[in-house]
Length: 200
Image (cartoon, rainbow, N blue to C red; front, side, top):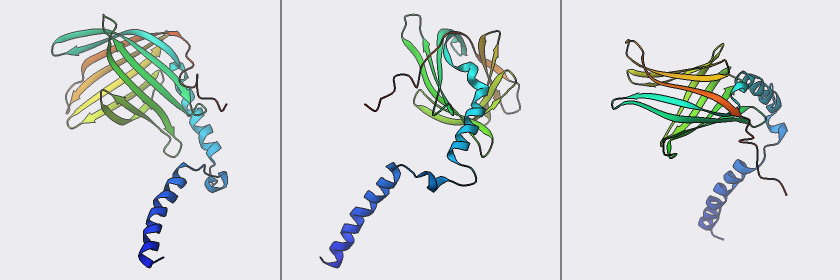
C-alpha cells in the first residue's frame, strides 16, 4: 500500500470514528465530576415542579387583535414531562369554526442547573426561537425581542384557569395588548411518554 493510499484510508476512517463517538453511550465514569448527571437531572426535575400545574389537556378560547379585526378561535394545549421529568413539552393547536387547524406549535420548557434559569424553545409556522422564561408567583412570563419591538407574554394559573396575554411594545412606548387566551383543564394526558417504543 502506497503512502497516498494509507492517507486516503485514514481520511475514510476518521469521519466514521467521529460518528461512533456521537452515537455511542457515554460511560458514567467519563462524565462524573463535581456534579453527576443524576444530580443535574434531579435539579432539573425539582425546578420543573413549578410548572406541574400545566400537565394535561386544556381547551378554551384565544382572541387575537389583527389589522383586519378581532379573530376568535378555539385553542388547545397538551402538556407533559419527559426525560425523567426534567423537561416539559407543550403542544398548542388552534381550530377554526370548521374544525380545520389554524395554528400549531411545539415548545420545550427546560431548566439549566448551571445558570439557574429557564428557557422556552419553540417551533411554530416555520419559525424557531429560544427565549428566557421567568417563573412568577402565579405563572410565568417570556419575551420575543426583534429590533425596537418586544412581544411580551404573561401567563397565570388562577381559579383552575390558564390565562395568557400578549402585548406589543415599540421602543419606550406603552404596551399594546394583542392576544389573550383562557383555557380550562379538560383531563389528564400520557403524552409524550405514553405509547413509547418498547424494547421487545
